[in-house]
Image (spheres, helix red, strand yellow):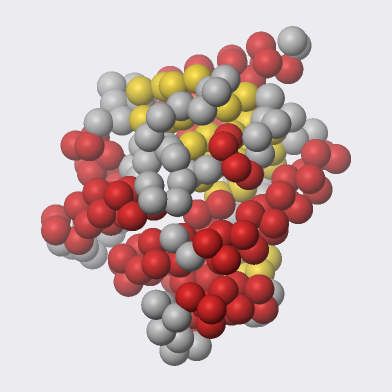
Length: 222
């Protein structure tokens, strides 16, 4: 089974998708981590992120290992564990440069589909990102667009980050500007055909996990 969870920054996609995967005994894929990994690698190599060809080649050359265990997440790039590094503000501020590079997207979508295909042998996977239902896994048995109002998303993202690690301006940039940039190459503001929209603004994480888990069980019996 494939469960696709799309939505804007701070809507709770990662925490929700991990929770659903754990609840249902499925694998988990945070596609955003692949874009962050390429961002980290390009910066580490001193590349100009505006040099789209060079960055795309870096994406193709990158040796990338991602955990699909919802309870034990890690990201390893060219032998270096970058699990924590890719969540740093400097990566968050620049990742849209990578995510809007169409050649990078092509390469990472290819890799994401390979991971999804491999997970099918173990029962399935919950995949979260921006374009899962519309591009990456259009045949997902359950498609969810997870939304929340802007203030709720800002509050959630702020709570995820270390106190004082980013300013209010940086936080708003990570949410509002990134969503605007990524909207130029991915549709995650409007539900795709067959997708269920869940507004999590006034819901707890457990409540959202409960709803998606119930929908998944219903979809699996159809």
